[in-house]
Amino acid sequence: MPLTDNETMEIFLKTGALLQGHFLLTSGRHSNQYFQCAKVLQYMNYTELICNKIADYFKNYEIDTVIAPAIGGIVVGQEVARQLGKKSIFAEREDKNLTLRRGFSIQPGEKVLVCEDVVTTGGSVFEVIDIVRENGGEVVGVGMIVDRSNGNVLFGVPQVSALKLDVVSYSPNECPLCKENIPVVKPGSRKISK
Image 1 (cartoon, rainbow, N blue to C red):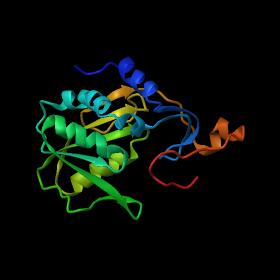
Image 2 (cartoon, rainbow, N blue to C red):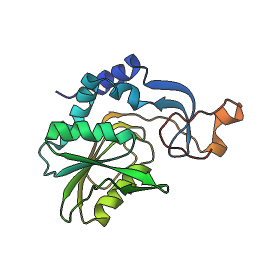
Image 3 (cartoon, helix red, strand yellow):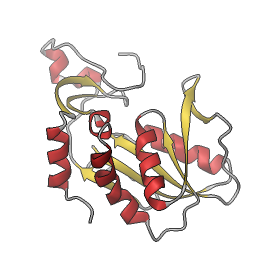
Image 4 (spheres, rainbow, N blue to C red):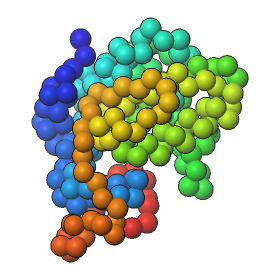
């Protein structure tokens, strides 16, 4: 049975995956909270429990392949694919754009589920959706561990998150933490300019 939001949040707190401070998000926005999903995903029992909510939601969908953006989404995509008994691939950055590499491909008509660890603005997920569609695939849905937008980012397909929160984020020029001269930290995997 899938975890509740409270049970999922307990896992984030127990593993030290919910960080407090001043963070530069992959989206370029700033926040006083950061979800370091890798701290949760290092524990296979938690990974299985958390990803079960995504797999359970999509279990009756026709899916051929699960795709995720590198790096954060890879473990999520692989675990959801494992639970669904499907193939798992990922897109990775080359010259700042997500692309299929390593011999991965999507065939015309292939039904694809997109998975991600954390969504704030949905930028990486939208890029992966474009890759699937440009290759003639059909996006059947999006699954994510943390929806930082509290459901405000919509992908135009069925979507589910293991945890939905309304976490405050700021544009850099409106960030109160910057105005207090609190140093900003970029803990994620993608290098972006401040």
